[in-house]
Length: 100
Length: 165
Image (cartoon, rainbow over all chains, first blue to last red; front, top):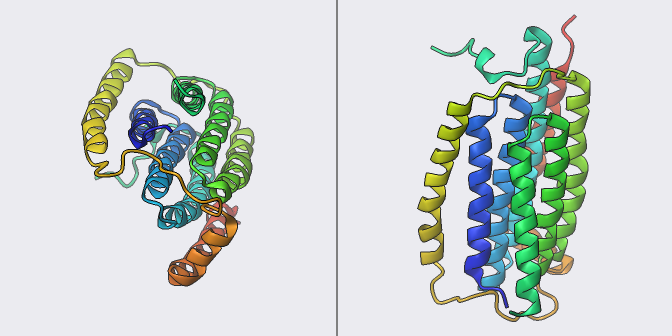
């Protein structure tokens, strides 16, 4: 049997790769994809704990996280399309109209 | 080393490699394809943890629907300019992320408590029946709220992406 810690460390690594993507990349679509990566890492933690503790609650929470991730991707990509239509760019540094 | 361990290590190595490809690649379409591969590998990891229903949902919803949406938007906007690499920023960002990793690992491995690893479970664990029973008994209200959330997301996306006339 694979110890629980291995799964937790793996999901921490994937989460951190997602954080690096959000910090480094200058393409708003890749930043959204990195956020999906982070959500998936957290899902893996939930599933691992659900299996280790023998409770279905973790899997149900993952179900809800997937719902929220779908909604987030849809609205985020709609915003990206709308911004691209006005500014012809995908660079988040150009999207600073609301910045104080 | 036992067979599940070797299987897990192969899956873990591949998923880390593909998620690195998502982040450290300049072509957006290649990043999206690497993300599809990562999502598939994480779905297989779900299956090794007896989460059959969630693994199938992961492939259908994530690797299927959401990634097709991403690819559609990439093709629609067609950003042909590759983003420039600023080496300082990449090094600083990677270092900050690595710091976060060194924060996470002791935090996660310390809290495992009495449970040392995935224990044996009976065959029905993670089946659609158990998920549905949990979903429609303890989590009815969040389930309904999730449906309203999806409706709001649909309306929001249509309103946002509509061309102003």
